[in-house]
Amino acid sequence: MTPAQFAFLTEFLKQRSGIAIGEDKRYLVEARLAPLARMRGLASLGDLIEGVRKGLDVDLGDAVIEAMTTNETFFFRDGSPFQALSEVMLPKLIAARSAERRLRIWSAACSTGQEPYSIAMTLDQHAAALAGWTIEIVATDLSAEVIAKAKAGLFTQFEVQRGLPIRVMLANFTQDGDKWRISEALRRRVHFRTLNLLRDFSALGRFDVVFCRNVLIYFDVATKRDVLARTARQTAEDGYLVLGAAESLASLGVPYLPVPARPGLFARVPSAANAPSRFGAAVA
Amino acid sequence: MKHCLVVDDSSVIRKVARRILEGQDFKISEAENGESALALCKQAMPDGILLDWNMPVMDGFDFLTALRSMPGGDAPKVVFCTTENDVSMITRAMRAGADEYVMKPFDSDIITSKFAEVGLL
Ligand SMILES: C[S@@+](CC[C@H](N)C(=O)[O-])C[C@H]1O[C@@H](n2cnc3c(N)ncnc32)[C@H](O)[C@@H]1O
Image (cartoon, rainbow over all chains, first blue to last red; front, side, top):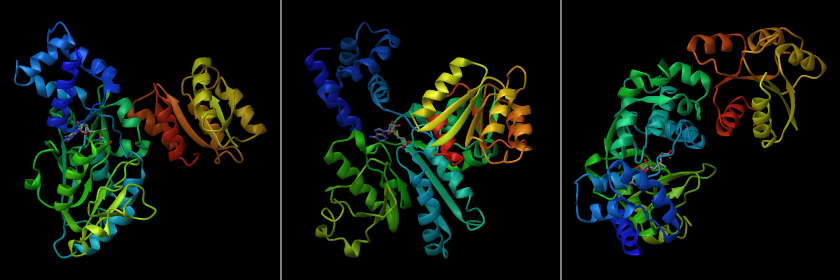
């Protein structure tokens, strides 16, 4: 891979997926793309990049992007967001939406589905309060491959053990050969589709809660700000945003405020109070 | 410092488990079958037990049953850690008084999340 090819690749990734790759991540590019080059019968990583540049094959660029995504995830990751859903967001939203009895939750970079399925399992704990409600869980990701896997709802033994208490696993999964299949009831509750956060997502409609965890970390500041500003427009004024444990909104100037003592949880700031001076500093 | 008893007939597994749990600040003792584990529990009840199923002399299931009927034997949190991965076996273990269940192979994330789940971390 020549410096020019590396430069083309980083620009291509940034434009198409927002994923920012620094010069220090050359090893990562090599580790992720060399197997793809081999699989496509290309002699080298250089040839693969040339293939993308010349539009050799329509799906080659997509395959490169998919290979460069990090899809690491697990059930009930970090614990606290799901606790916050159960203890803070749901009680408040159940009271606030008692007339329309409708809730919409978005998992905005859902990878192989553990996050939206954990949301669905958390909602199950509130089944009595939510009886008769229309609940929609929309789960999206850039990668068609992870969405297909999420939809199938079939997990390895290793995956079902990461974060899932055994009783929760027994209650929601059945054995299928050496894999574990999520219950049909849970599978039907989540609507999966591919979606690139860089593109317009206003057609998804308004959500009460948006989980956007461990994806913005791959973007540069301008991209983060853009994605979050558009997310805010799709979030109800009394809705919530949930970020990953290590993520903050520091100085991004987007209309959310951290909820005290709830790591990763942010409340949408209603637009009446939406003067730029009100946040930025306050959120930093 | 919390005390965890690791019961497995494989010294390799005991060593790996010891390393993971010592990293979480547990004091570790080891037993290679259910019988010597019971003897250790009679001397001092541990806070947690990581328990294999298939072992010579006394297996993990019989150990658990004996433990739970001992005075003070309902206190330790028992996490099964075994190649038995059939739902019927898991259910049987949970009914006999296990608190959590790990299907081998495992890694440190799985062990620590299960120990957190039962309140030991
Ligand atoms: C590390 S996973 C996070 C999964 C889950 N939210 C969690 O926290 O466990 C990051 C996901 O972001 C997706 N992703 C990366 N860039 C994206 C983009 N521009 N639009 C949508 N998804 C993207 C990747 O495909 C990957 O599945």
